[in-house]
Length: 261
Image (cartoon, rainbow, N blue to C red; front, side, top):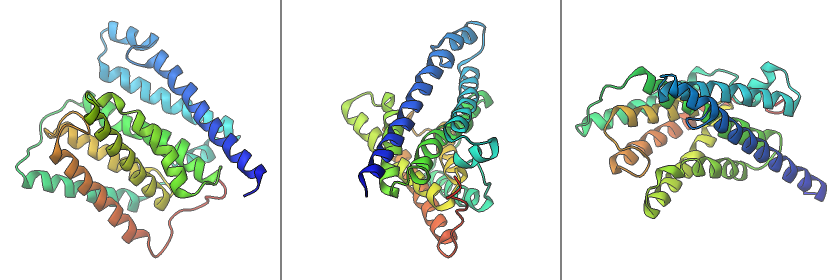
């Protein structure tokens, strides 16, 4: 690797991290639960779920605009850069099978689903995972792979470290914090691998959203360090998704148009 190439890659990595940090803190300051507009919505009688819905929708829109400006891309190409395009039924099916395996395990162990309101499920289990995937696997990982052209393990590590740090609020004790960081970091690596194999976010999003939904519906604890069974079913789901993806993609590579992204 030449010195020029190394400098270019370091500059691109710094640019992605810096831009993402600015967007993150600006959005939280404006639309977060304690932000300027977030607190106004809460004082106006809207719940936390509504505030998070607004935060996620605005966040994705801003991320999409930032990608268009950074890469000088039109909307269809920006969606491809972030991994939102193309759609893949097989990618979705691979993760749905994994979630079904986790549900089967929980019912076999005697767990039963609980009722949750729509305004809890949508922001926490649908929109939240989608925006996180767009940020960490789309904006970071895919651009580190395709634009900066880093090796998989380097790009996956650089994308999974901030993903793990974003969940540090779940660690109420030093031991719990270490467990949260380990679970989210290695989970992030696995999600990066799914995106690498499929070339889109959809398998990673379905798996991420499905796992969040299971933690909402079943008494598995509030976070990544609360419950051993919760982490076991998480491991089962991830293993099944990786296995299904490997089986479905080992003979033909479904990734397309990486060079154009």
